[in-house]
Image (cartoon, rainbow, N blue to C red; front, side, top):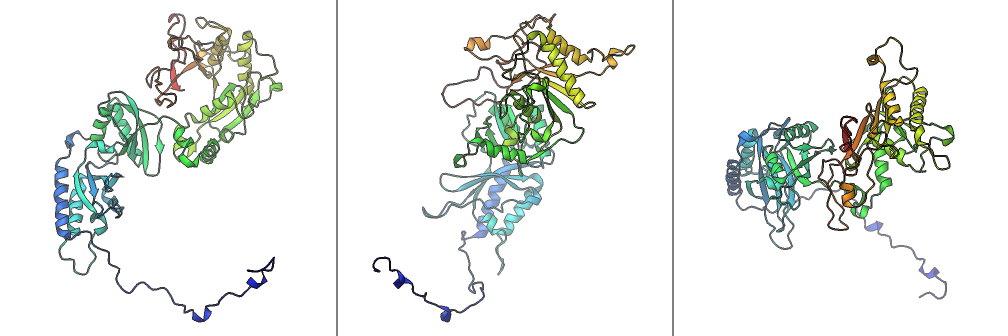
Length: 526
């Protein structure tokens, strides 16, 4: 070894092999690379498959009960299974990728690996394609093919069995088929979207609740249906080929915020959503949110923010919280609604309306608005927005309420909102003009929240909060179609079933119906 730092003795030239190099172009092997056949007798195998196919199709459910689905050929689903591996070290025999015949709409709906390392698939066969499939299997099993490559050998060679499919094979994960409870399910429906909408209409005709949200993927549209297992089994049985898979709906945003080792976080989800947003066009309708201001630079808000002001200029138009508080959240809700669906797929978000922010709640450091001035401030805030951007189609949203006045009677605040809605503020009505001809305003108000507490306190009916008793405004309450409960701590259960008014949302059921309006008029996801 070299002594000290003397490494010069290691500085020697490389061995050159140029003299031994013989360049040549690549050529395919001259010797045929024949694969080992998996079948000793292809003709016998084809005959076996044809007999199994005939038996499977003969066991199909009554065709008279099938539901007409737009873009869907009437047909039958069968189950196919691959050949078992030859030994413990042999690779699993996969479902052939070419088992589909798209031109005839013969398609694999779903497939999966079995415990014995075989694979099973659900194959949809339209009625008018049965003869075609039989012909392709017969050609595969032809006895005299000479030197030609055996037709469709990659499609059928590994198929060991064809049998009638029970509709339960469409369900993913463990399912209690005797459970009669109503829960949300995901129906994965083959594209195009028209097929999914037609199936949704058929489900509604069966008195099933179909959520308005959709997840749209390149090959699939996911419908959310509230039903018992037996109802879904009947629907899927009557619409063979439309549904590729049925899953229990998660009803939570957790799947895209925690994707294993990816650790997908809010920033990544936000950037992905913002990249798919198309701003509203010029002249689009606008919703003016009267709240705590707005974080106008928020990536999901900025493309659709048409204006931001404050009732008092000293307050500034920014939200009370630096990165977005209640006002920014309300603006996002107005623009996008529930983001669970868009965050789980890749649909384009084409906004049909814009949003404005009018800050009518004072920030920290300023005196709180006295209850007697709520109506005055609200009318003034509306007027300022209309002066700043006149002559546009606009509605107003107020998600703020107060317990300072009993809702059994009109308050100055609810009265001021009634006057706004009626277009009857001072100077707005002209003499000799019928009231019905005056411009009106659409104002949407929150019913008010129950803050929580012991179960008996939450379940007890809570009356509206001022100004939700307004006669002319539309009051909105909360409902949820989601059913997922946190896994930790265990044993939690919802207070009310899905699709019922939230016990944390107030109402007018305890108020005299002859003196106060019935509220809320509508419920939205909350």
